[in-house]
Length: 369
Ligand code: SF4
Image (tube, rainbow, N blue to C red; front, side):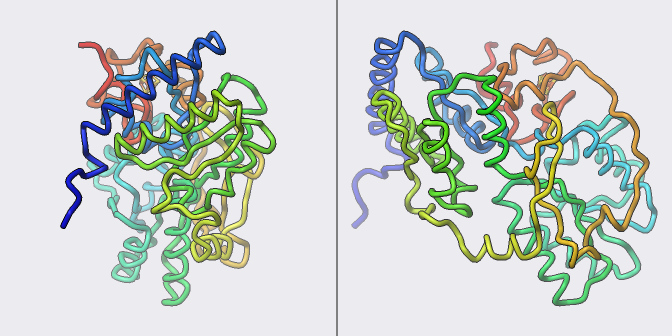
């Protein structure tokens, strides 16, 4: 017999947890004379906090700051422009995740290039792009490799498939990024005062809880790895508040049915087999040392940056403040374009396009009508 209460959807449990979180936040404010500030690292958390109403329900109690965890949003403008320039060759098929199609480059979007007749295909997995390469041996198939540790193993799976099947017309244009270096960068630069982190469930599934222990050991900040349902988010915020109140710098796994201590050793093995860390540019931040992953020299035949050259033009400047949004320096409504010139139908920056973007989340779920 099933339990009488589904713990993931019970509104009674959610209400009780919400009340407890609010009470703990009050205690924190009394103790430290300020609202607690937590950063959610993951773009899926940004959207989940907004969609479930948790962020709105807690807006007077906790400052929930969106961090640099949306893969599309953190991709540097010059990299977006280079990817769009890649479509120029008539012998090419560009494969990408759907979120990239409407991201504004300086001189157009992938969607516009597609309407002009370029062969650009949305795929659900990089391995699908290998299949397309096998079916089109006369064409070069290039996958646009954005994402964090959650996606990098899937890029490795595509390379393994291409290597084993000797698919020599497949390559990846890498712009993948790593979570730890960007968190270190934000903390070292002390741009935002934080009391802890809501840590990414998906990245932690690959990297494991221990991967984030540096936050406690070196920066003396607590972190809680969370799931994505309202009740999971509230439970993790409750834990984070308890740790922050006790000034107890621990990294706690609150997503135990998915995340282990060490992570997925198989995924990590293949990730490091095909890729090694490299310096990587981030939108609005610049190059951060060893914060990306590139294809290892021995697999350079799959490296699109070595196979193809694209004309590099200076990115066009706009008033978009995505760079500040992803560093947690401003909330989306502080951008003068938010909800006016920049909307999901007419996005000026990637944070309004992506399904994990902070501006899109605010626009859909937090905006005052
Ligand atoms: Fe950029 Fe639009 Fe967000 Fe402003 S509202 S920061 S223009 S995406």
